[in-house]
Image (cartoon, rainbow, N blue to C red; front, side, top):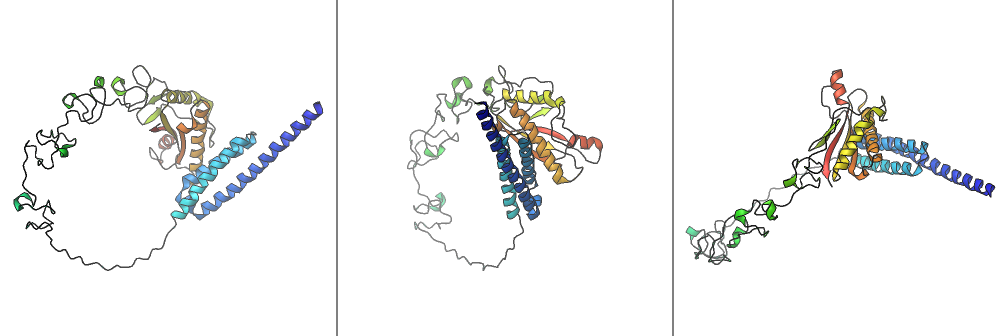
Length: 356
């Protein structure tokens, strides 16, 4: 029995080894395709997708080194998608030759007509198919019993004047409760949007999508937690309307994308803020200074953004709530001519992009 178990274990290891060798071959072939797309204009037309593809291939190699064939295959699929987008963009932004031919300018003859024969040309006639005097813009003179400015033949309520409040004013009928929410317009703070009486007839809104309605939320534009709807207080971060602002930078190994341990507390607080606002999606942005080649900086910033995203996923944040984008040196905050400015430009940012 022990010999049989040994043979089964050996067979499993050989199968896993074969799968890993096949994936490594795919990774190598994909790297060759990346170089082809780069030479065909991919680096110029869509450097970000090239950087993402290369970052995904690096992560695939690392997963294979650790024996995670499934995760490596996912990274390889992501690299294929990024590479496809880069190839399409390179093809679309290639210079095109367009031949322009002069077209003859048509001559349009406009003939004055008077379809209803009332002596008012159709171009000046507000009612070209119904005869009426010129002083009434070619429209017939009709009665307006309720004096609301809408002729009786067009007025659905000829004895009740229209209330002219911007809601269905063309039908000639008054609308005491435009939104039919049971709160009359005179008492309704939002007469065209239905809402409960306790909210003065306005819709129950939750602008920051934190699950606490605006009229009970003391911070209606920033996602927070019960009971007041304001963000939890953190030492190293602050949740704002458009971003999670960090008070210290995420640290990486020099020239690499490994997150250092002294940044774990900071990222743990970011993860908690995201758990407090479960409907918020965030874009993790990686930025560099302009030292070195732009393509290399784009790749490094993409890998670092993906490393931060992977850390947050391990802390329980759903992957579909997180996006990782490396901008390299393309979005500086300060001048790259000074050491202080370059330090400011080497940063990680957390942008709130949408709410789920």
